[in-house]
Image (cartoon, rainbow, N blue to C red; front, side, top):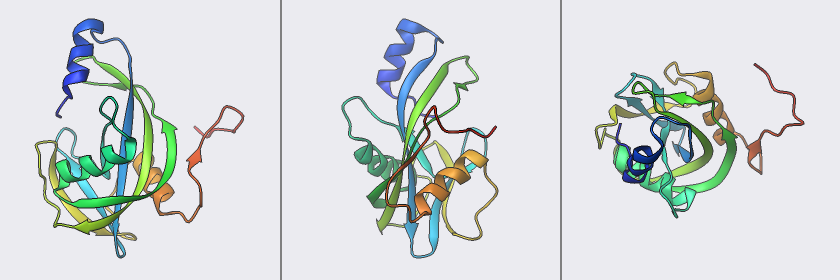
Length: 162
């Protein structure tokens, strides 16, 4: 996975200590299909995800990540969900936690392909015939596909499953 320079710089200072980052998930829809990528690190199918650069608007990060990872142009339609991920522990011991912004995106142009080294595949899947994926990623897609007029979020007063 490509690690942004600003994260590498921070890691030089804090080592493997937990790092709080902003992330995006781009759920790109074209007709009755959704864009998914297969991650190179673990083989999992997911929507396009990525890290928001310092000073970058989250919607702009979603557009950039879709172009960088799948070679597709897309535009954001709405913010569908804001959530905090569990702590992620990487193979090298680095720990990060993300505030993730899930966007429903509209395909503009381009045929998907693994445009960088982060993914081995990029393809359209029918909305009702997606490959198996984690409950977390399925939830992000479902939030983006819902007709809810505002973003979904959790708060301390909400009963949590798990």
